[in-house]
Amino acid sequence: MSNVATPQPLRRLRAGIVGGGRGAFIGSVHRIAAELDGQAQIVAGAMSSHPAIARESAAAWFLERAYTSYADMASSEAADRNGIDFVIIATPNDLHYPVARAFLSAGIHVVCDKPLALTLAEGEELVRLVAAGPALFALTHNYTGYPTVRQAREMVRGGQLGEIRKVMV
Image: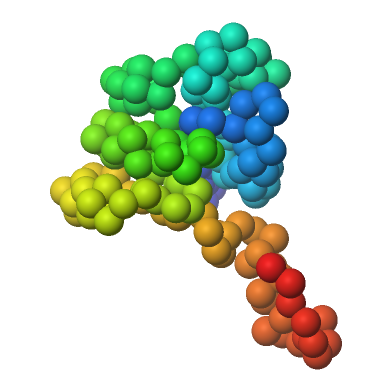
């Protein structure tokens, strides 16, 4: 009998998404990226400002919880012991700030598309909210956290792709 404990598997992170519902291209991109390495699963969403589309989109993604308001989602998920660990903001640009503010204020980590805000004052307020803690804030504009980007970087560094002559972003 060994004295070494068998490591317990870590649970997958529970993610939420605001925006990205039916008819929005970017939602599927974030879903694929978030779930690519098997460490996260999107379980809740406020996927549209139109209630019917929000519910239909959440059902199409088999989400456990569907919301018709990001404010309701932030407060409900923060109060739920099994609530989301972080939220992905995939809304039109003018909604990034108010959605981020709601989730940061609720203590929920935020992953947001660029731009994080439309004005300097909004950006500065988000910085203050993050500094006050406990939630973290991440911008997706460079995608360095995505497993495929990490793998590509290592392949370039390792010379596996030969001489790189052109990169299109």
